Length: 75
Image (cartoon, rainbow, N blue to C red; front, side, top):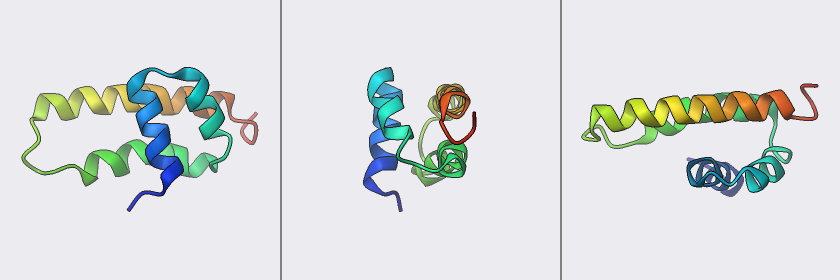
């Protein structure tokens, strides 16, 4: 189960809204951000197309690394 901030962060990442993603990520712990892409991919229906899963994994991985690099608790 995801909380509202986690869902909002995933949506911001997928929408390409960097400002929202930064604002939301500062309210989450770095470990939550680090684990979020894998948790999201694993929560998807098993019938989801493999190519879509691969693309999502790549996008979410890149976005989560960017958020961790600029997170105030990690700097």
